[in-house]
Image (cartoon, rainbow, N blue to C red; front, side, top):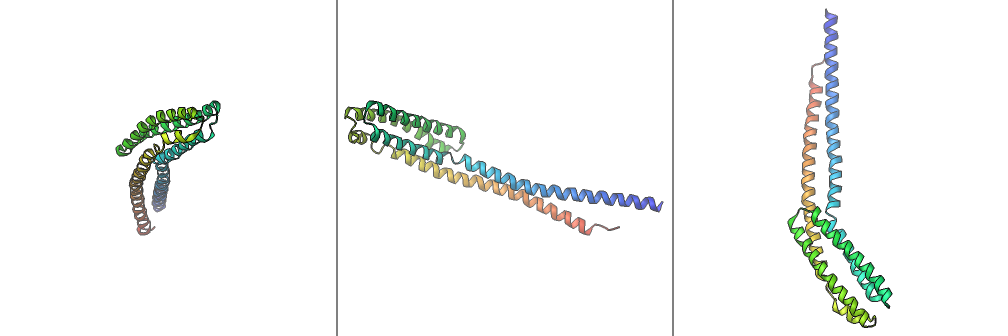
Amino acid sequence: MKERRKNAFLSIETLERVGLTVAFGFFLYLIWDSSAQLETQLKANTDQFAVVHDLQIEYKGEVQNWKNVLLRSNSQSSLAQSWTAFETQHKKVADAAKQGILQNDVRAINVKLQAFVEAHAENLALYKKSSEVLAQQNFNPHQADASVKGIDQPLLKILEEADAEMDDEKMRANGRLIAKSNNRIEQSLVALLLLMLIAIWRPRS
């Protein structure tokens, strides 16, 4: 009888140890998982909030393409080639801006992106007229350049303001993610501490 009780006690003690070990491992996993999730979410935020920054780069590429139209066009064929490259980049920028509006849910940023989309579309017609002036002036770029001089500046300013707001929103979103992750980690650490106290103070056989 004593032997049976001893074996039963050992079995319960073994189960307790296994249970404590499993629980300890579970909370360690939660801590690791919280850290891993935070890293993934912060990276996703970086990608999401880089939309306007990437759009700035693409738009500056479009401005450079327009300079190529002015400087490299010396015949109808070279003008057509340069204009096609400019128009392709213009469409790429327009599509990126519209996609940015769809992906973003911050109204203040979307208002600026919508203003950019509208002004960007209006500028295309002005650039087209300027390219016609370029051809009429025997590919002398001075008058064509003067006719559209500075029209890119308001758009660059819109994107700069939208990018600044994006950075602010990113910081707020990251702050919420970090606070949530820290809360989960703190809860897991408290649970681990309790398990350690139970393991230390539990009655020994």
